[in-house]
Amino acid sequence: MEKEDKRVNTPITKAAVKQLQVGDLISIYGVVYTGRDAALPQLVQSIQKGENLIELEGAVIMHTAVSPAGISPTTSNKEEIEENIAPLSKAGVRMHVGKGALSEKTVQALKKYNSVFVVTPPAAALLTSKVISKKVILFEKEGMEAMHCLHVVGLPGIVVIAHGESIYNLED
Image 1 (cartoon, rainbow, N blue to C red):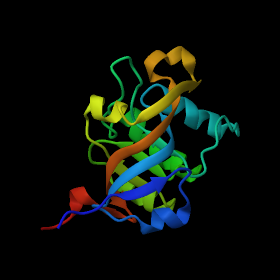
Image 2 (cartoon, rainbow, N blue to C red; image 1 turned 60 degrees about the vertical axis):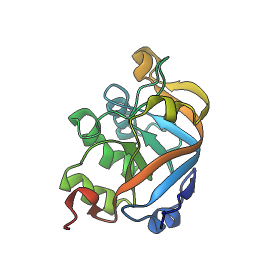
Image 3 (cartoon, rainbow, N blue to C red; image 1 turned 90 degrees about the vertical axis):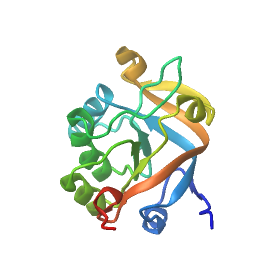
Image 4 (cartoon, helix red, strand yellow; image 1 turned 180 degrees about the horizontal axis):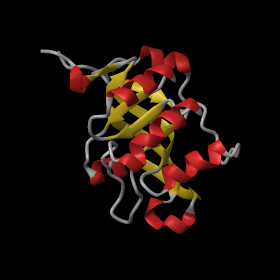
C-alpha cells in the first residue's frame, strides 16, 4: 500500500511537528527560507546579538543555494551548516531540509527544540518546479548563497529525524 504525503503548511506549529514521524512523506506549502555555509553562521551570529532579522518561529530552512540552475539540497552535516541547526531550532525553526546523516548531538538538539530534519531528492528540476516565487532577504553579498525567501507548493521530502529518532540509526 502506497503511503500518502502529509501536507505541511508554513509556518509550522509545534503541534504539527509532534504529528510528524520518521519515514513520513511530506509536501511543504508556503514560505521556505534558504541558507547554507555562508549565510547560516551569519544568521546565528545575528540571533546571538539579539537581532531579529527574520521571523523564525515555525520556519523551514532548506540547506541550498539559489542559482539560475535552480535549487537542490547540499550536505547538511558540513560543519558550517550542522553547527547552526541547534541554535536555529532554539530560535524557532521547526524544520531543516537538506541531505545526509546528522550527528547524535544534533538529533538530540532537534528533539529538545521540537524540530525535525527532512531530506528531499537532489533533483534540481523537480524542486525548482515547486517554487512559485523567490527573493533575496538577507546577506545579499553572498550571491547565490544569500538567504532567499521561497514560496513553494508541494516541495517533497521525507522526515528522517524526529523526536530523537533517526532513520540512519534504525535497526532492521
